[in-house]
Image 1 (cartoon, rainbow, N blue to C red):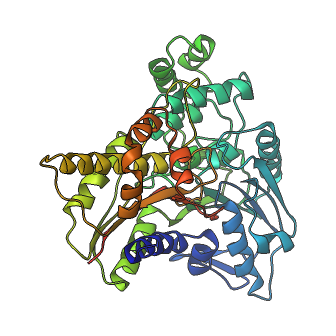
Image 2: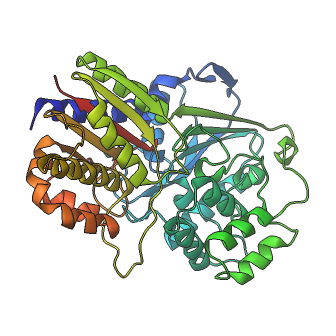
Length: 464
């Protein structure tokens, strides 16, 4: 492996390490037996009878691990109970030995980012605990990316099967995350502030690891503890009609009617229990990972520029083309680090392969660079490709689509070995089969669960 490739992978890993859930909790949360200090806020919890810890998401296990470590560092340990929904295989090893009174439910298969019957059952347990809370209790809600699929309680008139079918349609047809979450809030008893409205605890504290660029709280996990904006049934109906016209007529009709799915008044603080207070803290986000990756690149001697941006309107193919152009523009010893989360419009299931948005980004960039090499070989005027470069793109959660990979990487060596395969690569891109191509050449990122989730991180470096 070339030095520049090793450096790019090291830079990417530094970004992921900086947002590991247990780490950011230990860095930002303090407990002295009386006061819980989070960032610069101090909360007096001396008289709390119980801490009810509930949560959902790919990073919820790591966050719980961090919280338990913080509590163990003091003599006065509160009485705790709770329930956490996680993906299978994502329980931190140290947490398996000391979860105490907290049930940890592996509620969905790894790589399958949609709710299951086990998720629904786990959510019922979370709501049961929330319902039982009193003014003398504290609810500590741990939320991260993946929380939408791991915290599921459909409205009473909708089945889980219909809810999953709606999400699949919207996702496969390129709906933006904002649109997807607007629908999720409208068809859920727990999202869109539903969990907060159920709580009767004296303190409701939400800790967030954000997987949405810009950290709009109502969109992270579809905002279970965010009371405003209210779920909007009419908006959800329009979005559903746009992406799945006439496929869910009964759902559209129910959402279009004023009622529980379309409250007549904005929800606000008055919807909390009398005398209760609520606090939300974002502990890490995509910018945190990008900044840490930049620091590591600087430490390794590269001059880099960076960006963390909202890409809801952009596709993975567009990002791949942008990264290919950056490869050709970089000066020796420089780099580009970016974060985001583009969409992938999937082909028909009959021809669809296996892949993920990060692998699609990398393969699209590789295909474009291969086209430039072909053009140069035949006397074309394409810009010269650096002999020493590396491009990495991966999901910080360790998952990329329904695969075991977090993402993928390429360098000039991959281009040299793949030049004769461009037609097959173009076919794979058309069928969203990037994993088949990149795993065959040994260019996928295999991290396993990282216990965090702050969207995607991309690194492009040019050697000297």
